[in-house]
Length: 438
Image (cartoon, rainbow, N blue to C red; front, side, top):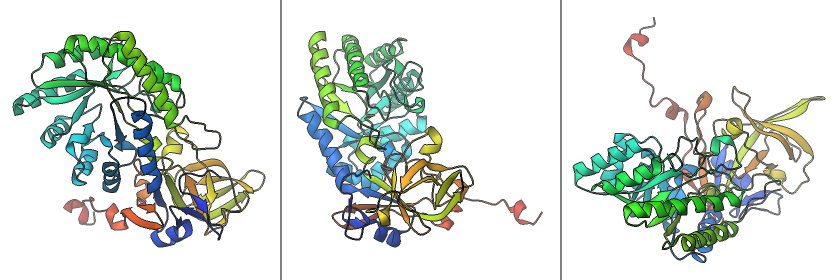
């Protein structure tokens, strides 16, 4: 059994998280249930700040809110001294209503509208990460109307292709994200920014992909970014910061062997220093935006086993009371997970099954899982579901999105309420002509 953070097995043979019995959690809050190990989230934040802070003179670490964002997560990040990277007006609104400091918020997005940029400028976010030349021109115009200078980073395409799923590769030349260095668009953006009185170019940004295990990709990204930083400094009179994004992979299965945060820090920090010396540059402020590697391992989803269906000579299906609507990742790009019967966690796994969801779809959660003997009523715990599960959840088949609790030092507290049936129809409207019975 995979174990993360505070997970253990108690004297009842039950899986516990944060000192809370998973069976008690399922009984008290219902299933499906997202469980967030708060101690592990905090530990991962501190590990990033420590690992990079020990190796590089000036570092800022932002949490990539797209991985998991709600007001309570914003509060944890604020307490841990993190910056916050938001990728939409909705994420920004969440941060603002949580009281997250504006001077620690960066706004991303490859397709920001005028409304988005107006909202960012009126809110006073710390950085807007500009993703295209049209966006740069629009932002300059909007800032000029207000008589201010917008602080920006330019997101560039470094041309670094990583070994990860195609859907989460973002640093190659053929990408919707950023301005290509090779094409000359990124340098054109830097020149436009330098010539604008309403734009202040603070730094350059790259994010090469997600769920990455290969550290060579980060080393190559540093080389490309620092070479480009030297070119930008020549037209801009200097450059304060280089943002290398996030993307460090996590362990989803026993076969996964991701680098540690310390290993990542060693590669990036040493490469930054070497490149600065080679190019004759002052060391810029280093910025990072991890998301998955902070919250992913800290999440566990609890399901209730509803049906165990044996197909002789074929396979056994274990169907649970959630699936595609609370975790679309397996269906989207073959994401893999491991699981345990939480109320039999001390028993030896003896069944190889397919874990399936409850939707009118072939929503396979785990194609082949070896678990303890499964029976209806058991609680199935799926590990490493903290990143992109709640964030991507939907109401497919008009399922209600699950609740989320944080567990910490034996206490479980709701941080996202479970949706109810009336929530599903709250936005529905029936025109009067359809009320007349045809």
